[in-house]
Image 1 (cartoon, rainbow, N blue to C red):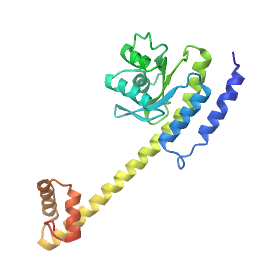
Image 2 (spheres, helix red, strand yellow; image 1 turned 90 degrees about the horizontal axis):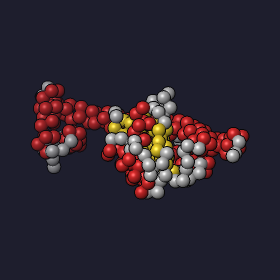
Image 3 (tube, helix red, strand yellow; image 1 turned 90 degrees about the vertical axis):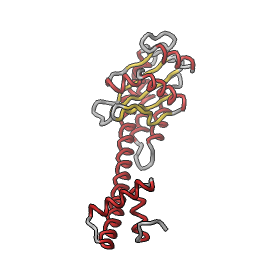
Image 4 (tube, helix red, strand yellow; image 1 turned 30 degrees about the vertical axis):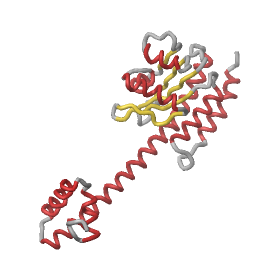
Length: 239
């Protein structure tokens, strides 16, 4: 059996690669693909990997190394139960040692077995992270009760979920900033349109807004689009 020093020699270069990943050069998906590549390199069984994130209690797979991993995640989401949901919601490592004989999640275990996966391992994101989720491994021919294999998986998952979690938070922050910018731009054009109507028709701000809102409903178009038309043409009626 390989010694701990042998394992260190295998996994440390993988950890070093993860540490060198930067937000500027990688997307969330590319980070996970790197994690999966490293998992395949240091673990027996060529596992597939995915990351489940809970957003307001709703699970989603934010990245996966293969469509099959995503499909197995979604099987659990539809059922409302499974290793990935258990790990993500409780913060405890969980899995299926043998998909051909699992009393806890028999339907999911049978589905995983039918796709050629013998074992399933799910690791929660560390409790200090700002998101709830799990890293999931779907493995072929891996004895999860083997201490060495379990130890390697645990070390890789514990090290990998940090970059993955950080990338998710970074991506979410960028999306929120983009949504905020769009909202500010919408508010600006609506205020401009209100100003035009107030000046032209001697209306109050509330009355001008009511007219824009009524036209939006009557035409079944967004309020911003009505306001944009008023700003560009100076008219309430489209050309």
